[in-house]
Image 1: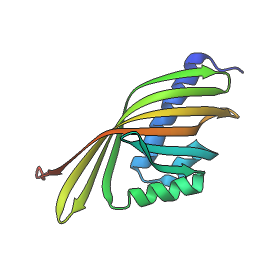
Image 2: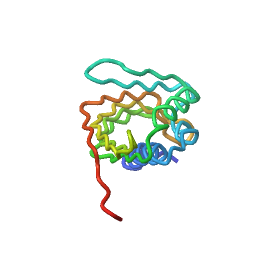
Image 3: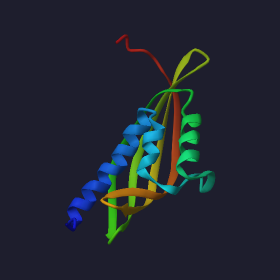
Length: 149
């Protein structure tokens, strides 16, 4: 049965949210299953490519290494737009990433504003990310203090 455009957009939104949730849980092996086998993940900062990863295994290892010293990570996905043409789609997704880590016995919060430009493919009945370009537009780092909770 053919999916409607609305159903496809819902599935794509759920895909990007699931990728973020699994990243927050540091479940990288499951997270990369939401990418195609030879997917490309590219990270840019200040217009320059700072990391380029190809394939699920390489991505899982790099994501784990990048977040190994981070105690807590939250992805807050905001507005997103998708263009669907058959079994391929493109999307732009805004994301606010917050990471909390310990540095020299201080809790440090790093907040990053990211815009993801994705290319998706439908394999079988499931949408997967085939290419993700993450444009890290700004970053703020500050010490946080315990609220006593």
